[in-house]
Amino acid sequence: MLVLDASALTKRYVAEEYSDWIDEVMGQDSHWAGSALLATETAIAIGRGNPKATELAAKDARLSRDLDFFDLVPIDADCLVRAIDLGRGYGLRTLDAIHLAATSAIPEEFQFVTFDERQRDAAGALGLKVLQPPV
Image (cartoon, rainbow, N blue to C red; front, side, top):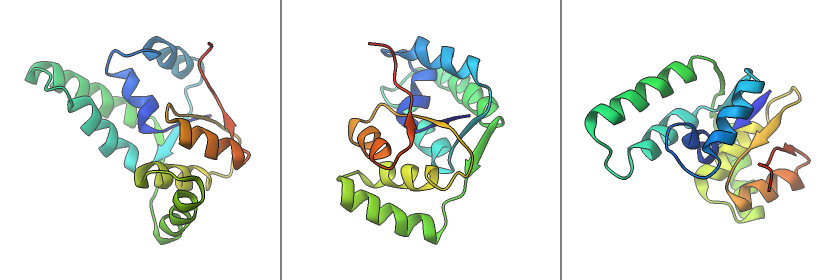
């Protein structure tokens, strides 16, 4: 299973460095998961840069179709308390801490994909298997 945060999933809809790699790894493992924030944060991110309305609509439609295949981890009070500890302990931004707190609650084995360096380091420190693009 692949668990993605928004920094990774956004690359599927916005042409950036490693966008092709994200498509490749998502194609190799069709069991996807992430926090419930993933939909909102990714939708906001793909709207940055003021794409044309038709282009944004196509990206939103693709994101919506993809999200149907995601197991989204709910954000509850326990998750938010855990996020405080992670954010303070690893110097994470709020949304990154919430994503990581939700991710750490997934009971099955997975590979975590993020392009945020602090979040990646925190995930590794927590013992999560972090998948990174080839250098």
